Length: 165
Image 1: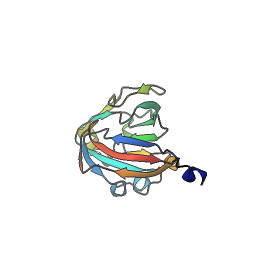
Image 2 (image 1 turned 60 degrees about the vertical axis):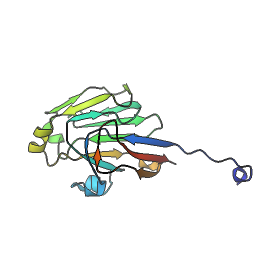
Image 3 (image 1 turned 45 degrees about the vertical axis):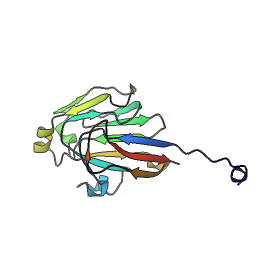
Image 4 (image 1 turned 90 degrees about the horizontal axis):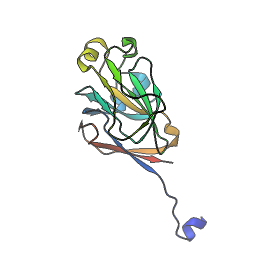
C-alpha cells in the first residue's frame, strides 16, 4: 500500500523465450501424451520439428543431460527451468539418433547448439517427433504470454514471454 501511495511499482521479471527448434508450434494440450498434455510436469508448449537441430532458447546453464540423450534441462539467468524433451517415447532409443554438445553445469548462451537428433529415425521408431518444451518450475511463473503463430524458426521466432511472480 505504501508503494502505491509513493508511486513505486514492484518490478516483475519477464523472460523472453525463443524457438529452440524449427517447425510447427503445438499447444501443450494437443500433445498425444497425458504427462505433457495434462501439464503434470509443468506448463509450456511443444514443437513438431521439421529438422533435427536444437539451439539454446536462453542464456543460462545446463542443469541436466539425460543419459539417454533424448532430453536436456536448462536454467535461465532469471531462474526458469526448461525441459526440452525430443519426441515421445524416445527414452527407449537409449541415445541412438541423438547427439549432445553440452555437459551438466556448462554455461550456455542464446543460440548455442546444444543437441541434434535424427528426425527421420525418430519418426520411424518413436511414438511421435513432437517435442515438448516444459517449464518444470511453473510455481515461479505468473503466466506465459504466447506470441507466435504456427511456423517457427530456431533462435529467431519469439514464441512467448514468461512473466515471473
